Length: 131
Image (tube, rainbow, N blue to C red; front, side, top):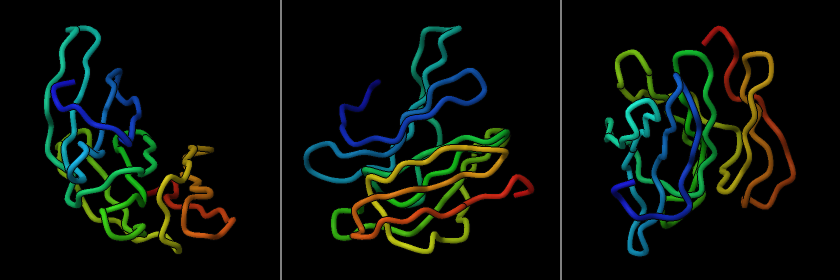
């Protein structure tokens, strides 16, 4: 990676590793870097729309979803997705609860987001397989 940071979101998609957002010790970041093991190289792609750290990330075919996180002031309910075809970020419908440091898992084409630092113990389905 070219940008030193912690509290990043990480996922694999299209045989590449995506490292998203994070915290550099001073501020939350929008930076997105991609590792291509076939080239053994790191590249940048388009930045997130919103600075965030401690978010959860999941990939479904053709897209990477970034859910919640922390912007330096509050836990977030916002969701954005990266089209792997166009490398363009889009705003998606928000989660029902603000969450940072939550977990996400893909099951049958849906993203389930669980837990986090919003003070609730809950789970929600964020993305259906048709989106």
